[in-house]
Length: 296
Image (tube, rainbow, N blue to C red; front, side, top):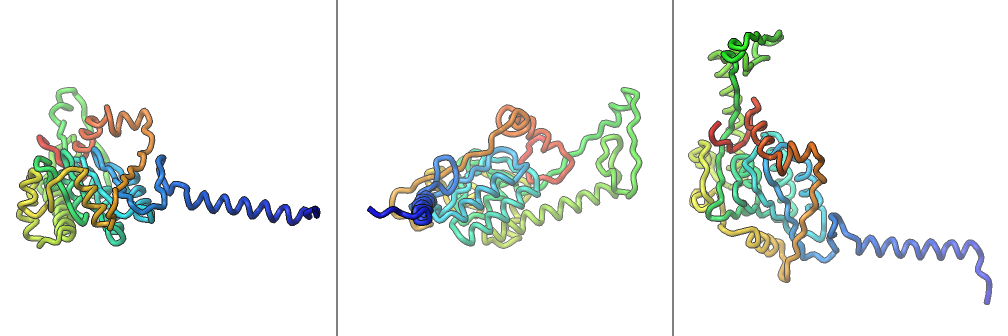
């Protein structure tokens, strides 16, 4: 038997390694712990739960599902009272990008109000339970005046500023009529953005949305009669619908990507035991919010 040269042995080894690498790429998971095989019968579920204070995870999950050939359609599962305007708008923009490539079905859980409804409005189809609380198309901005309390404590809070509106909303003094008008104009502008985006996403006339955009919440059944929701059904129904819209005719496999690990601070200020504190902080912050915050 003829001896192989070192060069030929190296070439054979390279070929074997290349073969295994190629095979592993074909069979390896695209993403997530459980993985997404190349078989294209999968529906990806993106969960938006609790206060919308940061869009990073949701944007990443939407992008991964959008770019995966194994995912045929996406369900946006919303259980949220809404939250900050900026992250809500970022998520809606990403849904619009995704919708251009794949069908997106929004599934509304217990509560999908204000910013929660805002992000859902971009989906191809919105499905809610009959008793889901949704809508709350409005903007809120909370202020606190502690001037009298400071006086009782013998404290004097003041600031120096450059720009007459720089300390609008200071808790140490009442707001002037001019300042109130300025803030109201700001909120009206953000409110109009909400209305226009919902009208665009739902294919409704803006004046029709404006008629129900007074901050009221509706049940899923009521929202359907108003054109804010398309169908009634639960998460399983939404997954089934998304799969069929995506062209899946066989059994549908569901993929849910793992969330980032939550640190101790994350538990305090994010989901879990700290969610109430997080909600209170966000609803009390003097920034415009697409937030369902009864009692404020």
